[in-house]
Amino acid sequence: MDQNEAKRRAAKVAVAEIQGDMLIGLGTGSTAAIFVDLLIEKVRTENLRVTAVCTSERTAAQAQAGGIQMADFSQHTTLDVTFDGADVVDLTSFALLKGLGGALLREKIVAQASKRLVIMVDPSKVTPRFGGTLPVEIVQFGHRATLARLAQFGQVVIRTGRDSTDTFLTDGGNYIADLTVSSIDNPDDLQTRLKTIAGVIETGLFIRMAKTIIVGEETGPAVYHDPHG
Image 1: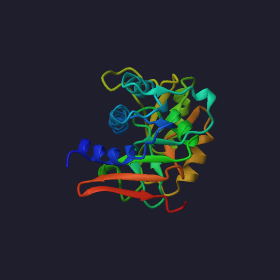
Image 2: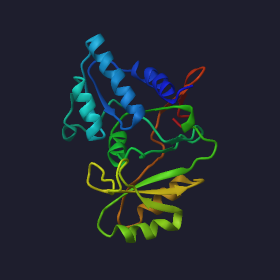
Image 3: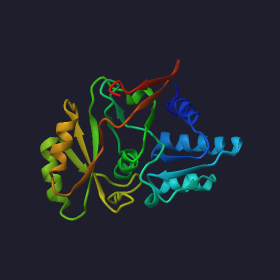
Image 4: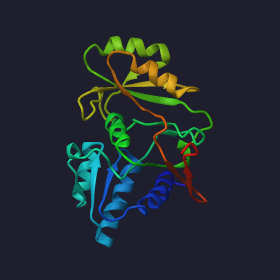
């Protein structure tokens, strides 16, 4: 099955949760972009009123172009629900790796402010061994020293732009260090150790945050709920 079709199947299940007068968080990445398109269609077709907090400038531009009203996040402490994708998911622990889209800090802030985090993925994101590329957002100042500290955990490189050799900058003006960790047996421990490094702002480890994971399987979307409550 085409990967985009799998993402669309998952997003269709998620968008069905949208009701009028919701304050929702919108994630970043290819799956989130598909969800936003479906949300725009639903809002127009059903004449719903929803307001959104977006995790990146590009998501905000897409949503606003489709007529979705933006909320002033500085005026809110709690969102009803956030819809986002993930790069790797563990269906046993519900731990996630996120941030290949470069918006992990804002994604985590919005997710933590939400009553629920709904994750939409295609089957390739579900792996038997939790690990892979772990994005780490770091400050520009002294970044080479920060990279040297991160290297004790695995191979690490500074991310460059998709179509250039220029260093990638997040919407907050920070760098992304992509850390390769083939197997993450204890996400909590790794998160704690990484966050003790001066220069590290946030990591793409999302632990005990997702409440629902929707996988766009070929036989139909599969919906998983956090077994830990």
